[in-house]
Image 1 (tube, rainbow, N blue to C red):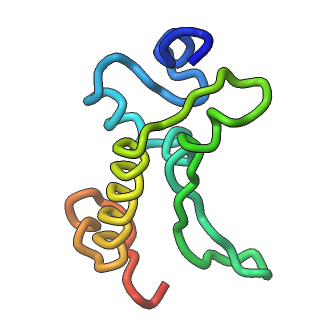
Image 2 (cartoon, one colour; image 1 turned 180 degrees about the vertical axis):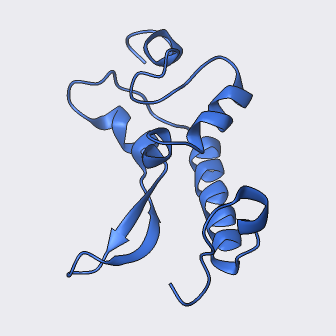
Length: 109
């Protein structure tokens, strides 16, 4: 990173919350607007909901013009992919809906 740690700009939640506290980061990413940096809705041609897909913003943002460059190491990229895949699988199976109060992501979606 050529501008210091990410927390130097994002500790207040500017676009994404990246505090020095991993628990605060995890709590924030479950809420709007931060969750949209992690996962997005895919839609059909008619605009109806199709599925949830990874947003890849944490990976891609470091390569965009106008943002300080950074590269996530393989371990972090793998952790993000694994986390998305695990949560998505539980959501599709309907096993996280009761605990989180989230809509069921079962096969009928």
